[in-house]
Image 1 (cartoon, rainbow, N blue to C red):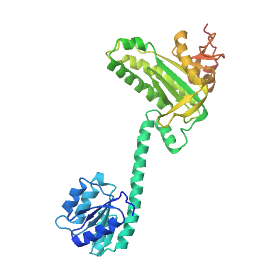
Image 2 (cartoon, rainbow, N blue to C red):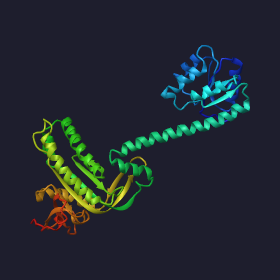
Image 3 (cartoon, rainbow, N blue to C red):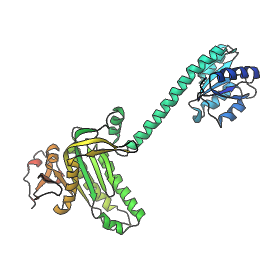
Image 4 (cartoon, rainbow, N blue to C red):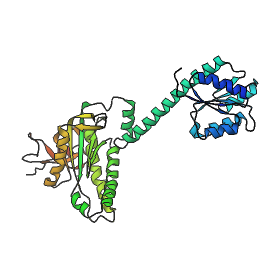
Length: 369
């Protein structure tokens, strides 16, 4: 018979009964270890974890019920199934066995056919438990990885929808952020201080992105690419993006007030926001996959971020973002001859603030030349 990987521990002080059980179980292809007492059983279990234990109740020294207590209280043996065996057919003993979390109770004399059936049933259940535990472990690990890039509510939706990360063309808003003059700042710091600064800064920024239902798609040195609406749309993605940008601006003020002692210059940023259709999904090969967004608006957001330097502001948005973000945006129109890398003209606006006033979006726009 083909050998299987199942492991069985027989805890039985009667050598004839133990040997009979061993032969029957090994015929079915399982690996077997023996113990003649409770103490020996615990010694075996300290170095070897079986899938199933046949445990006699009446043993010399520590009885089977006490051994069962030890097994069930050991978290490393949590998946091990225990079948109690005894010639005592009293109801009290059977009830006590189940109270102590025995998985089943067999009465002696045990027949070969009965052992075969129990092995088949319990080993199938055990394999299912082990498989479920592995799936749970993988799911927990995947959720941990996803939580580094997506907010908790987005992670829940991704986990519940198996095809969420498949490639699709979807409407989304892209936010591109870059730390100003970071090369100059880095020249004045040790490498470990540069890493510490980036960790401090991006911890705050990423928390804000997540709080506005965004996702962090990439960290590129001193730059961050966030998406709103990919992979999950909230129905107000452009609004979330502009509110997040304003929140980052305000958070940066607090950051600079409490900046690290090794930093003698204030941190400044440029943010570009663009709205349109992107391809969002996994890109790569079986060796390495990465969830990413691709499309013209990704480039537009990057170009707008670069343009903030020329205009002398910290946030620029394109026309579709301004329109989709709704009322209350305080903006000024930027007149630029051309945007690097763009063959077609685009509307560009500063994002000065957001107000609760519905009329704010209709205020006169100021042009930059």
